[in-house]
Length: 46
Picture 1 (cartoon, helix red, strand yellow):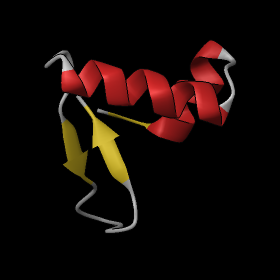
Picture 2: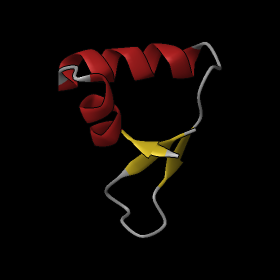
Picture 3: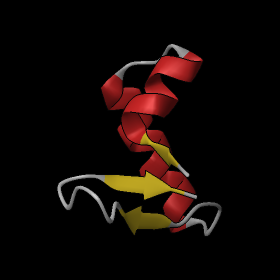
Picture 4: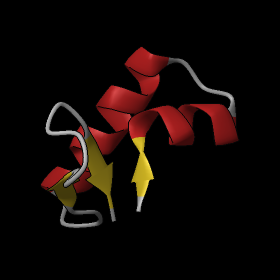
C-alpha cells in the first residue's frame, strides 16, 4: 500500500496530477483506497 505522497515522490509528479490520476483509477476499479489505520487523516492506495 502506498500513500499519495509516496506515489508523488516515486514518480516525481505534482499533487494535483496525482489526485486526478488516483480518482480516475479508483473510479475504473483499478485501485482501492483504504484508510490508514495509524493516521485517520491519510488513505493508502492498493
